[in-house]
Length: 208
Image (spheres, rainbow, N blue to C red):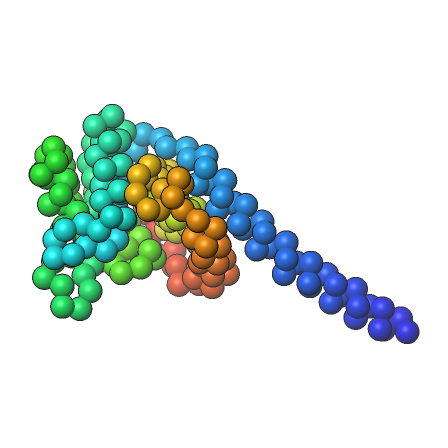
């Protein structure tokens, strides 16, 4: 009888954890999206999104508009665009983003395009490596609101000091995002913190 009760308690505790942990993570994603703490930094990074033969998609355009806004406000002296291309593409997310910024008032010598990464972790490794070469540590990540927490967590794990400036326009802004995006990003965040961190090594850290 005692053994049965113990098993029930253990199972109940496991079920409770299975409910509490995702809800806690969802809360963290929501708070990060609704309460961004954008701080002045040494660089702005625009995480990639789809482009169509050099023309930014709506999601990427919203990120570029936000990056240009905070650059003009003096939050950072340079912008890094990051993102590779899909098979068959004639250009990359990074290059199309750089081209747009150059044609919308950002000096060419203030933009670095890193044509690597088709997912957040690979893109983060790529721009962190560039930051290491430049011997800079602080960065403002421009991305979708519900993507902020995961993007900042990855940057922190690689030794950077990030803040996030989420998009204010477009389909992925808070005004237009739905519960599905929040739940999807919560799952991606949990997947990273439970499994993805295993691929991060001390040798990748900035200044270490």
